[in-house]
Length: 402
Image 1 (cartoon, rainbow, N blue to C red):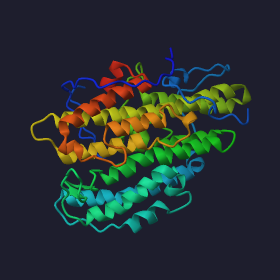
Image 2: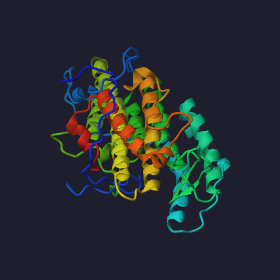
Image 3: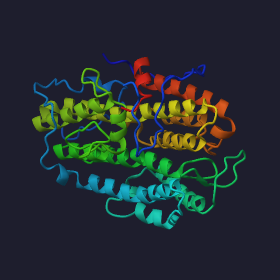
Image 4: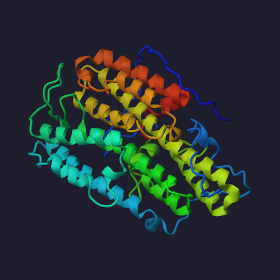
């Protein structure tokens, strides 16, 4: 049964000790917990509700919804999206290579803002072309910060901030932003989610359109629900949805619900006009699950940071690394069409302000004012719970990498 859409603001909650050992949050390594009509598209009147996906598997137009996703023409239909994914990898790989060199105490290769911008505009379509204007402005500024930080030596968090540099293996700007993470995680939404919305809005959705959504999300028609699979693994947003999904078919998480919505959308389109309402409901459900999985991942990172801040010798580079990821995930949704998402710009602004991500960014305060930071992140976690209507059990599950 769906809950009504509510946008609530929750005050600060008392900081509670965490008993769960959390993974470090790096996107390249997961640490498993020890326990275990022709013009119809997304509705232009109301955005997706938090529980829209619970009805996705059912059909109201008299068709049988398959249990698997069948698309022999997937590679052809999703060629643009797969090319965008390859261009995204090409943009982020040089920054990953620098981190690898710094982790081995080696001299990192050179990387300039001009080189990053060239990668950003490479190809058709290109990343810059599909990214929201507001987030592209952030990315452009962070490219400059990256070049400056790479050549600045070691970073020291300070209030007021001084200069950026390398902090552990991560390149930070003066304000404590892990630049690769903020660029990368924000583009999952500001580029790929935005591009997926454009694909749906381009005309009457077809089965090929659904293939585009699968690829833009970061999944594959085989739907591995596994970001570590040896073949056709889930990447980008789909990879994080898989981390938030326990894999229990009796308790489907955001990945399984997103998959079900895509299967239903494709089957409804194949059935013709009689299933247009089901098609639209399924598309709305898919985008809702993409969004919910993203903010569930923000819950993960906030919990990860609070846990790291609670130990005697905090891993401050790791803390700012996790915070950079959460910054990108939260800010990436700002400026997207309001009727195509649950969270509002005002709520995004409130989360960013509470967690040091509003301009001027103050990420360094996670180091210089860590007790205050832990309380603010805990309060922001409660805000996310209220916005999406997540249950207590869901919130606990989000603290794990599955």
